[in-house]
Structures are given as structure tokens and as C-alpha cells.
Image (tube, rainbow, N blue to C red; front, side):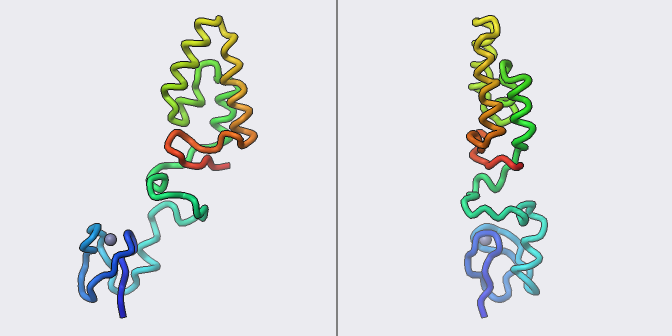
Length: 128
Ligand SMILES: [Zn+2]
């Protein structure tokens, strides 16, 4: 009977204690159950969630949306989501237009709450 690495899925030797491919410790008693506990993503069941995104924490859609509505002219919601360049651009535009360009951040706040903007700068889906 074969065992498989819980982290990378590589087939393991019967009596090994570490995955030769990725170095994850193996549990000889129960590979499937206990090794998945504690990775922090067991409650997340979106199939499109990729390996890179798996490493990042999900941002709150409500928090990002409200930041956009109230402080959007200063790009606060974009700092929160990791869109740093866009956030700095919004601050600059707000200053140069005496606040008129601030409507951009306000609209983005609405788009975030409406679900039109639903990922952060790392492609991680926002949580409700
Ligand atoms: Zn492995």
C-alpha cells in the first residue's frame, strides 16, 4: 500500500519520515487527516484557489470597500489590498486635482462592495 505526501502529492517510501521531494514530515499513522489540520485553509473550498494564493491571508471585502468609500481619495483601500502603486497614484492625483480625482477611489470602494473588484494585488479572493 502506497503513501503520498500530503503537501506535494509525491509517492513516498513505506518507512520514510520526510518527503524526499519537498521535505514535509510524514505521519505513518494517518497521512490524510492530521497533516491537513493547521494549514489554515481547510475551510476554504474554492477550487480556483491556487498554490501561490494559498500562502496569503484573505482580505476583508467589507473593510476594503469601506476604506474606499471613506478614504478612497487617499488610496487607503489600495494600500490595504496591496495595490501600492495605484494607491500612490491616487494620492498624487487627489492632490493635483484638489480632491476631484478622489471620486476614483470612492467608485472603487463601491466596486469592491459590489463584487466587481474581488481579488487583492496577489490574486487572493476577498472574503465576505
Ligand atoms: Zn512532498
